[in-house]
Length: 196
Image (cartoon, rainbow, N blue to C red; front, side, top):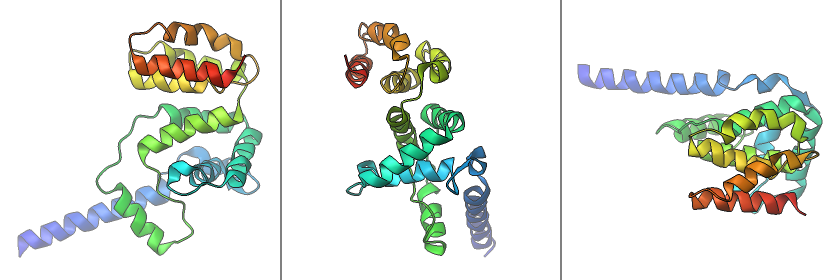
C-alpha cells in the first residue's frame, strides 16, 4: 500500500510540476506584443500555419505571423535567435502534459517539439529577413563554435539575412570547404536563399 501511495504521489507531483511549467514557464516573450499577441503567440502561429506542424499549412497565417514578428523587431529577433540556438530535449512527459492541458483549454497553442522549435525559429528569421547589422553580431560566436548544431543553425540563419547580407558570405564560402557534408549543403542552400 505504501508503495502505491508513493507512486501516486510521484505522479501527482510530476503532473503538478508539468502544469506549473506550462503556466509559468514561458519566456519573456509574453510581454512583447503586436496586435494583442505576444512574440511567443506569433511564433506559435508561424509554426502552426506551416506544413511542419503536420497539417497542410496556411500561407496567409504564416505570412501574417512573419509580418508581426518583423514589426515587433529586435525583441522578436532576440527571441527567435534564442529559440534557434537553444539545445533542449523534450522529456517523456512533455507531450502528454501539453495534451492534458490542451484538453482543459482547447484554445491553447499546439505542442511544438524542441527540435521543431529550433528549426522553425530559424525559418522565421529567414522569412523576416533581419538586417545583417542587427543579427550578424549574434551569429559570429555560433559560426566559430566547435558545436555542430550551433554552426549549422547559424548557417541557416545566414541564408535569411536582409540588407548587408554580404557580411556573411565569407562564412558561407568557408563552410563550403568543410569536411561536414551537411554544413556544406546548408552553406550552399543559404547562398541560394541569398540569391545573386
